[in-house]
Figure 1 (tube, rainbow, N blue to C red):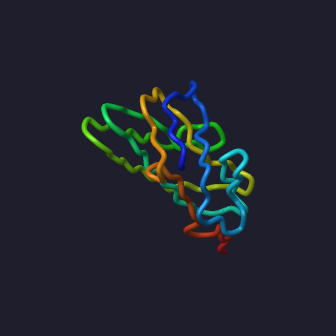
Figure 2: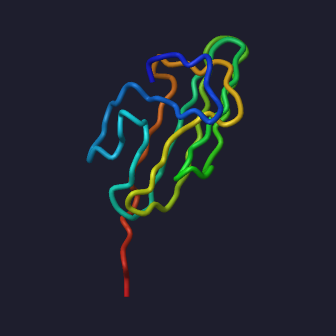
Length: 126
C-alpha cells in the first residue's frame, strides 16, 4: 500500500493500491479482495505499518467473518506488526483486510501489505 490512511470508516476495507504479484488474478484490485479460484488450504498475511504515536487495528476477514486480528502501534518513529492465518477456502470464498476497531495512523510507503497463497489444493482421497 502506497497511500497513508489516517482515517478509516467503521469496518472499512483496506485498499491495497500497489499490486506486486497476482498469479492467476485471484486478487481484485478494484475491491481489494482475494477470491479463491479453487478449494484448498490457503495462508494469508498482513503487515501493518504505523508511524509516530499511532495505533491501527485491522482484521483478516473471510466472507464477512473475522479470522485474525492484526494490531500495530508505534510510539517513536516507524513500526510494523505482522499477523497470518491458515484457512480452508471453497472456490468463490472472499478474503480481505478491513479496519477492526479503530485506526489512528495506518501508513503506506509499502509498510502495510496483504499477501496470500495456496498451500494445498483440496484432494478427495478414497
